[in-house]
Amino acid sequence: MLDYLRGVSKESAWQNLITSLLKFEMENTITGNLPTTSRPEAIAAWIKSKKKDIQPKIKADEYGSSFMAWWLAIQPKWRLADDSSFVYSTPADEDWRFLHKGGSSGLYIVVVALSWWVKTLTADDCHIRVWTTVRDVTWVIDEIYKKVKTTSSGKKRRNEETEQPSNAKRFVTIKLVICRNIT
Image (cartoon, rainbow, N blue to C red; front, side, top):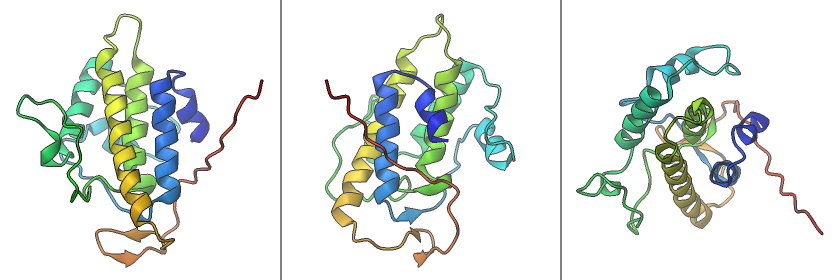
């Protein structure tokens, strides 16, 4: 799946998102399901499908609107300003309880679902909305990662909803490989 995610777009914003997701998944100890309020039906159908390597057929504008409705619905209340723009100053006591979910049912799903929107764009589509969303998802993952780094103590992954250690097998294995070109 890493090859798929890296191959979605060569845009630096997309590549930064994938790097942020990988860093988060490597350090994170909390698994669980993201809220499903306003989640696009295409995502629910894909999750139930046994064909995870097949992207659902979607229309960029319609899907983009439904993805954004879901993304807005699962944000902490403080993230939305009165003018419906996002707030980019995290309160010191924020725990990201509803979004701090790793593994195959967590933020990974957001990134995969966002990849479908990116892949459906054509030259005629307005790209500003999708790339703004990519940057926003990256910001959220980076903020949660900061929290994870400051609280990480090598604990076993646990399910936040039950607060019990999880012995379940993970379906997502991600390796972070950093390559540098030396000239």
